[in-house]
Amino acid sequence: MSIKPRVPIPQGGASLMLAFQSKQKNIIVIGDSTVAASRVLSCLEADAQVYLIANPDYMCSELQYRVDHQQIILLADEFKPSMLDKHYFDLGFICNIPSETTAESIVGQFRQYRIPVNITDHNDLCDFFMTSNYRDQSLQIAVSTNGQASKLSSRIRRHITSSLPSQLGDAINRVGVLRKKVRTSDPSSAASIRRMKWLAQICEYWSMERLAQLSDKDMEELLDSYHNDEGYESFDANSVTNSPVNSSDKFGLVKSTTTSTGSIVLVGSGTGDPELLTLAAHRAIEEADLVLADKIVPAEVVALVKCDLKIARKFPGNADAAQEEFNEMALRAIKQGKKVVRLKQGDPYLFGRGGEEVLFFRKHNIVPRVIPGISSTVAAGLLAGIPLTHRSVASQFLVTTGTGARNSSAPLPTFDKHRTDVFLMAIHRLEALIKDLTTTQQYPADIPCAIVERASCKDQRVIWGQLSNIVQVLESCGGSRPPGLLIIGHAINVLKHENKDMEGVAANIMTASGLASDVVYGEKMTSKDIVKDDSNLLGLHDPENVF
Image 1 (tube, rainbow, N blue to C red):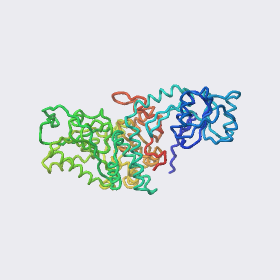
Image 2: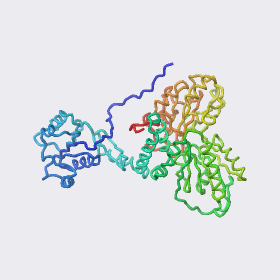
Image 3: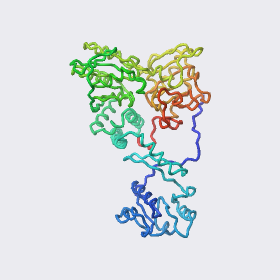
């Protein structure tokens, strides 16, 4: 059966947004005003060679300074068309229209030499527009109103940049160094996808502060884990001393800071939104001396940690050795009298290896306390607009794993049309799983299914279709963005809005807009939190072709 491709519908009227590499390129600026000075500064920051046409008698002080200090070349005091024949220019800025000519005439002269030109206050004649820019080292953010409201673009830029995390430029630079190192250590073209996914996981799960503080030693340890497929990275945050509280709550959390005996608590961190943490979980995190966190615990929850933090980086491969190392790390800390929190995504006992950890500590005469968390097995469907059960459609639901030990296939259920199936740890082997379900487990190829990624987070995404095409639908929107799970069953269509096609991608399939904000609990999301179209719901991608 042929699969109809999901082809985005172009919306005309946009500018082609590019990061133009101007190093050692020749750019001509005509004008003596502060607008010309602003264009010159932008060109100099892009390492261009700037040629200025301006009358020194009327030149603004900034331009005069740059001429005097040989930062730019004063070519002449007035423009003549013969200059375009004598000199080669890559771009042109016309900030003042020379006397005895018109805007149309001078633009036409530039175009005869195929020089893209921007002319102040003549948007209809411009080949390109200038943007309102924000820069933090290698990071550049540009806002354009396509010449419609240039003054408003500055306000929009300020609004956007005010919400950016601190140390973003440092983080980008350190990740750039790490990218070069991993590419050097594994240079083959065949490994490009693996490099991209590995680095994407680090960019996704680590906070900007941690990325900004990456040392050369940290990078070497990361590279070791890249080649070994698993490992750990340690990060010490500034410790916070809490006031001692000599009591314990109903979960048995020891609160006294004077005890010499350590403890361990297995804490379910829920689906990812810190507001969905239980009070007991929040208190345990606050009072911990050491937090050992799963890799997939979102940064918003990890940010609550104020003590020593260690994060597991279990990249694809056998994670048994990594699990054992975390157990030993916790055991040493307990013997030192520390309060240890094992921070786990979802619920500790639902495919979280919580039971294994309890058995491990029992062997050492330690009884862990366990705090439940909201599991994505039930919450992800709700947050995506999918009821797992619904009268006359699905009278039961099943939760299972799509991956067995050591990344092998797992025992799979037989299809039941009255049941909704939820598969965890399934997206990374989606194609093989679907083949097994349809060929051996009697699942119809046209049964509805949906992938819910990063449920309850601001970038929640739902990709839906049928078993026959869900792999292609996922690939068409950029690939997977973990963590995610697979839901299969007719219940997927029960609340799906009538404007939703048989396949697609959105933050929520129940709303007309596809936005999670229309049904979000608690505080309403602001416009900057909302994902508005498929293009902003992309997963792994490589726009700069650096991998």
